[in-house]
Image (cartoon, rainbow, N blue to C red; front, side, top):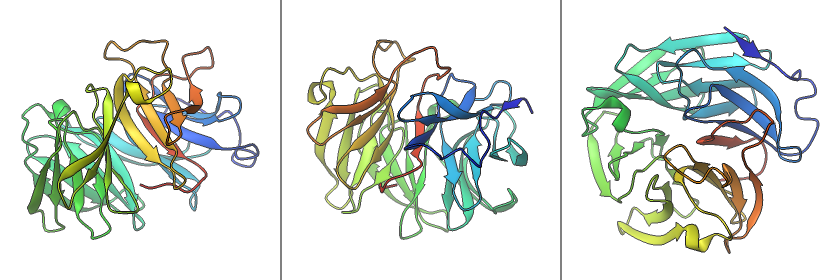
Amino acid sequence: MVSLALLSSVNLFAKGEQYLVAGSGWDKVAIIDRDTKAPVWMTVLPEGGECNSVVYSKARGTVAYSYSRGARSVDMTNMLLWDYKVEAPREVQSIVEHKGKYVLGVCGNPAAIVVLDRFGGEKKVIEFDAGEKNPHGQFRQIRVSPEGNYLVPLLSGKVLVINPDGEVIKTHEVGGALFSLTQLPDGNWLLPQGDAHSYVEYDPRSEQIVERVTSDDIENVKLGFVAQLIRYRDGRTLICNWLRHGGDKRQPMLMEVDADGKVLWSVGRSDKGIGDISAVVPLGGKFAQ
């Protein structure tokens, strides 16, 4: 595997806050430093890979990521630990860590939720109908609820709730191209709406949108395809602003805004080797997942 380690794991976290990032159209997964806005660690995707989901395991000191034709885990020296592969036209677009296991979202006909052990061994497969024949148009990031259900936000604007037995127990009609889902402490969901250039807070109990945020609500920023969101416990929001669907390339690719829409920090296009960002994991701070 062709890969690049810029710093050893000994001094990787010597500075301030850092972020694990990746993005569709960018051939790398990287950890970037908040202060310098530069990579401190990188790994290169397999040829033709597309990464929309990343995981960092602090206990193991490892990074796991999806890459369209599979998912894999590497350590901070870029040693390959495991590699789970699928055949075209199936796509692995999501990976999340849950109770010591990895949960993959596999687009296909049928689509599937695949549970792996920590070594990448397949433990469980749940098949379901994503409502779209084209695998690439089905979904990106999935999540696991506190109750153990699988939450699948679809690019068609719906959220499927699938129980551990594989039954779709609820379908939420939200709208927009739903890239991911963040579960907030009060039970609401934070949902980016992709090319609708917005994100919403949705109450799954009342099945109502309680807040919508657009470019008009953020200071001096135009939203492109709104991808993964992170909501910190103090109200800050980290936004992946993916710009490859005709968005204004001068806009930030990753930004942090406060509850009033003021931009507190951002990363734009530069000569520092960072590509388009659609997925992020902060490596510090308290935030919802």
